[in-house]
Length: 113
Image 1 (cartoon, helix red, strand yellow):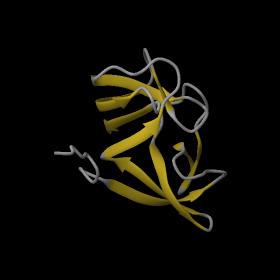
Image 2 (image 1 turned 135 degrees about the vertical axis):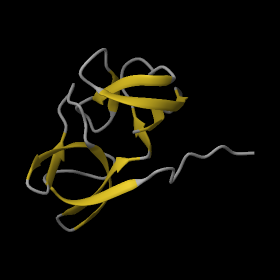
Image 3 (image 1 turned 45 degrees about the horizontal axis):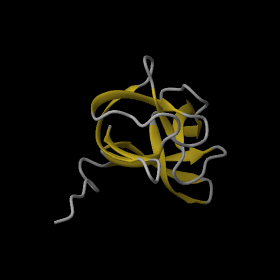
Image 4 (image 1 turned 60 degrees about the vertical axis):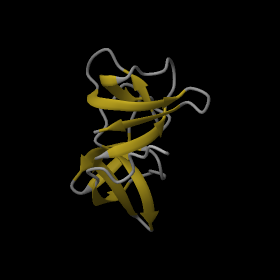
């Protein structure tokens, strides 16, 4: 049996994407606009896709993202943007998420926002 977290509690909104690409950790930077996060930023969501200047951004639900640095722990942990589109474990100032899977070989983490 394969365990899947896809689609659980997904909430996706459409924003104007300012310099974003699919998969990026983003933050709201203006009226209806998101931009890529810098390292250490608390993210507001993740870009799921682009259509012209518009970006679909998941703001809640299950997300799988690349991580940098040490592998995040499981359970309720704080994550912040790593400045490269992914996330990193944060000691403070991050977003509290429920980490449900870590693939250390692929450096990917699945969490519920």
